[in-house]
Every structure is written in C-alpha cells, then in structure tokens.
Amino acid sequence: MTIKFIGKAKITKQGQVTLPFEAREELKLDLNSDVYWYLVDDHLVVVKDLVSVDDLINKISKQKKSNKK
Image (cartoon, rainbow, N blue to C red; front, side, top):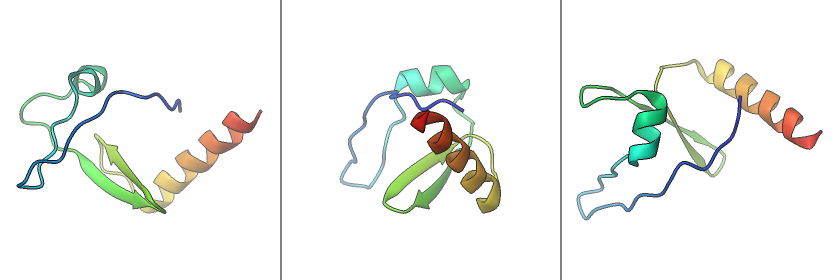
C-alpha cells in the first residue's frame, strides 16, 4: 500500500465534499460509485471498497512499518 497526496477539497455549507478529479481517476470512480468513510484516530480515511475495521487496521499498520524503513 502506498500513501500518496491526491488533492484537496472544501466542505460546502451543506457539508458536502467533492472528490478531486485525480482521486476519481486513480480509483476509477464514476458517478454511481460509493465510497466509504472511516475515522482512524484523528484521520478521515476514504476507501472505494467496504473493508472490515480489522482489515483497515492491518493495511495501515503495514504501511506505517514500510514507511519507517
């Protein structure tokens, strides 16, 4: 798993966020795609496929270990 900055977005008055074009393109998301939101400590994580909390923790843990090398 690779961590990559993909863009930024502003929250509207209605609480809506637009996914940056780069994120939609990279993840192959179209207009009917669903995304899933997780709160990990003080980080908001958005994924295109629903995963269990345990799987998400494992992926994040593996990434942290590989970044320390």
